[in-house]
Image 1 (cartoon, rainbow, N blue to C red):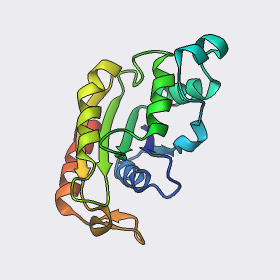
Image 2: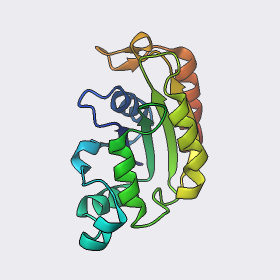
Image 3: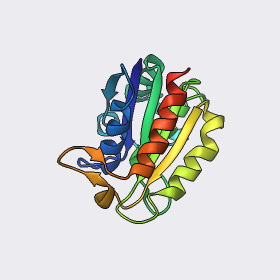
Length: 176
């Protein structure tokens, strides 16, 4: 199974990228492709820019990476209660290729933050919009207090409740 995974953050040390990679590695027999959304940085989306220059190649590359995957594991960072501007811009450009950005792929959505909310606001927004963008949402899980629940040296989540929920989602993914 080809699994595309990424953190929806442009931080070089993204805790969401770490969480997404951890989760993807839990999938048995997965060929995990970890991407960095910094590699897809484009001008800020605008209708005028699209009319003048068309859709950037990087948006097509991202869309094609989704298309080549069998499933997607992504984790959202939360900036002021919403998506990061880097992810939102990438998503906006990609949606201009096809509103069905996720191409009916099975998707596991995660989120985390250093604080107790675990970026639940952005995760709720992503969950709510998933059907509109053709994401076959398998599950959505938030990990609160990242630094208290993730062992950076070992690269593992130490919160057993989260791990149980994650394995439950992976089981659903595996039976597809």
